[in-house]
Length: 107
Length: 112
Image 1 (cartoon, rainbow over the protein chains, first blue to last red):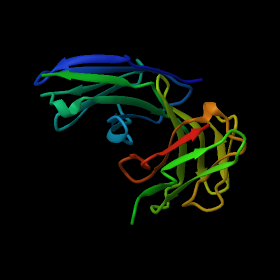
Image 2 (image 1 turned 180 degrees about the vertical axis):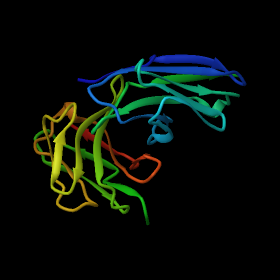
Image 3 (image 1 turned 180 degrees about the horizontal axis):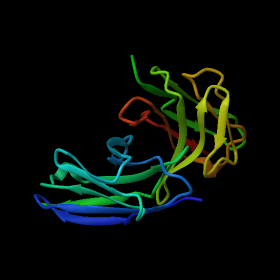
Image 4 (image 1 turned 45 degrees about the vertical axis):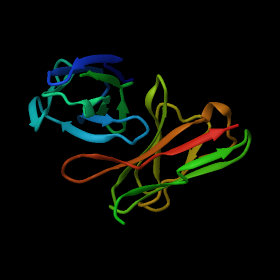
């Protein structure tokens, strides 16, 4: 079976840094995704990690530790438009999503 | 236009009716997926397909049927719709070097 856990909600301040954690227990592993989803819209791709380590892409970074079944998404210099849900997903053959973390940004 | 498209975008139907949601992608991606999204549950996998004529169950397959006779199309059928199938349905496909999973815009289904 597969189990993917991430916090339900988080709150941060504009201009700050926030880290969203994701832990997973899966029968197989071919990679881990992070997606952003604004209310009423389709998810949009942020990152896909296959190997251990940190990948940086502008204000967003994603980290993976396969041995610990752990990933995090780091958002820097938060902006109001970053208020959204952030979805962690694991791929073995199929792709299973966690329930998502709703991030609130305060001015 | 290139991409992944879903139709209809909005559908209202009645309990017991058959409904088919269409999904078409222009990239010839091998893998395609159907998800439903409900408040409090996130995205849940209904069915997926690794290639034409190959389909497999996901987390919540009951009440749904899929087919994949052509690589580019992956329709999802609700054979006898129930109120619990009221949801937003997303189709997705994956391919290319980035490993990105591409989503359609979603189909909002209401079953009365």
